[in-house]
Image 1: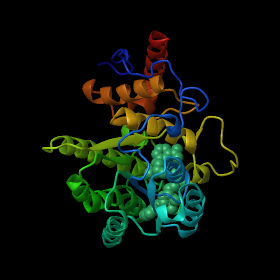
Image 2: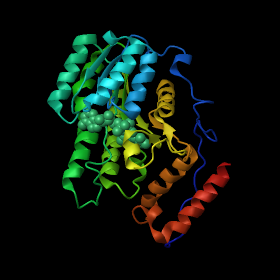
Image 3: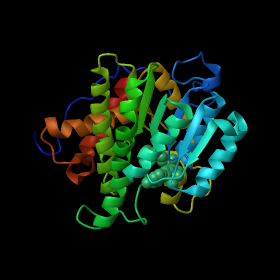
Image 4: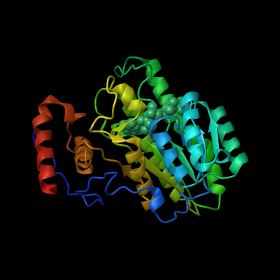
Length: 327
Ligand SMILES: NC(=O)c1ccc[n+]([C@@H]2O[C@H](COP(=O)([O-])OP(=O)(O)OC[C@H]3O[C@@H](n4cnc5c(N)ncnc54)[C@H](O)[C@@H]3O)[C@@H](O)[C@H]2O)c1
């Protein structure tokens, strides 16, 4: 294909949310408004890593409203205590365990699993959510800051694997259905330049979770399901510090609560890919960007052509045409 040509036409999407923007005050629901779900259910157990802040804390708040027992996990003790205090007032202190560990440490994760099963003998929701965007604020290139790369991979990839290795085998032996929710990122799919370590770690989370989903549904009695949770721009500690100087939630971002309510609804619906919009990027835009990235391979374009100066006009035209077709 000649340099700068348009590439494939955007496909029309048939997804459920075509043309719908998901807002807290219209289509989002509090889980408390919904009929009982066998996993997201009063008295069942949720393990949430990264529960000391942002998306993890918001998940703990919502699941506490459902009356679930919560094992809250974070390396940051102060944040963990704050979440514990908050959700204990909703669900009762005896239904909350706070465990401060580093998910990158397998021994600590195995001890966490033992504590949870000793206390409650089951896990209904395993949410692998602890994550870091950088280490020491260092992003760099693919050939610099190896320590920062390792730290990001230790938490975002090895941490997810440790939790899966410690818990999934026992969840398979349970009678009741349960879910594993791994928090990925759009950056792990479209790979925007600027933070290669984070992008690569989240691409690994996507791959690990897809494999897990296949393995789980291939079990003789498939009652554990996997879900890849792909938040949009969500205002949290992670993005708050990245966008230094912004004190309040920027208009383009969703709150952690909005993101979590969307996620909970889609887990209830049984979705594997939970692609969350925000106030800046609607689902159709994400879909077109994802398809453009995939077509770099099938159309023989250079890597990350979306950010290649010679393809800028073609990409802009593709987006314009694609959105016009959908509207
Ligand atoms: N905020 C966004 O816009 C956004 C977008 C896409 C994906 N995500 C992902 O969502 C997840 C949650 O991020 P957030 O935005 O709530 O960030 P956050 O910084 O507010 O929360 C992350 C939590 O993880 C904890 N943590 C970090 N390393 C840990 C470790 N090794 N062991 C245990 N706990 C650890 C932190 O202490 C923190 O409390 C992350 O996986 C992140 O990559 C966030």
